[in-house]
Length: 180
Image 1 (cartoon, helix red, strand yellow):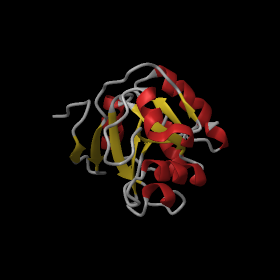
Image 2: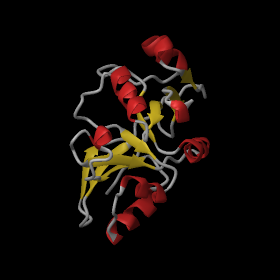
Image 3: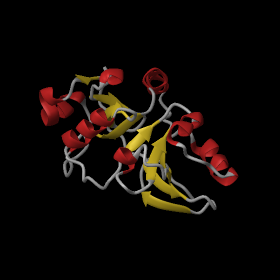
Image 4: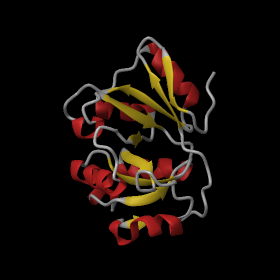
């Protein structure tokens, strides 16, 4: 379904997420609409490996590669420069995207089949993230194409950091991973 423009609620290594193909503009826009996400706020892009950054023309310094190899796979989403126009529908004019290689083997397997997925917590903006599929269904019902239930995921969202080319690090959101 994800390869054909579907939008689903799937478990990640942190919480349930609304997911759609990051390479399908219409599917990504539908995920934004379902979430009620602020237009200028990009979603996280889940990738299966560091190599997937090539799809987005992300260039990494030696320092950035070392950082990513230390923390990925893991519960840390890293904002990187993504200046091209090709993925503007994802970066929403910010010219940056947050990427994560999740530490969840089933999700990595899925990503290898589908390619990169946009992901955002499974809740309408302003509400608490769904900790179960039952809660996600209360939020979205039939508007979501499919749900993958792996039980309650009462976890913390990923830590989000901005990594600059020179290795400078800025913590944007404290989450599952402590840095420093």
